[in-house]
Image (cartoon, rainbow, N blue to C red):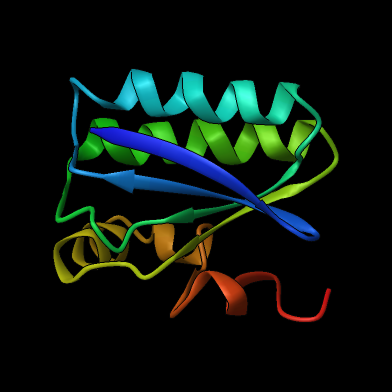
Length: 110
């Protein structure tokens, strides 16, 4: 999985390219943890290029959400692909991790 991030005004966009599974989940969690530790507590994870996610990946996203909230911010997800959306819905985690169609929409005018 390839990860990158970019400050976008009031939030930081983390782009995750590849499969979010038991191999890459710890990497995502550590990466977002570093972004939060650097002072960015409003995170949008762009999943446009993430075509697969398993339970480990879901756990990583929840861990990232927890890290952002403990820092006083929030984490949102954007551009969710069909398989990832299905996992979120089957586990009812779509109620916790609200998805947005784009990163710009995730924090809107907040």
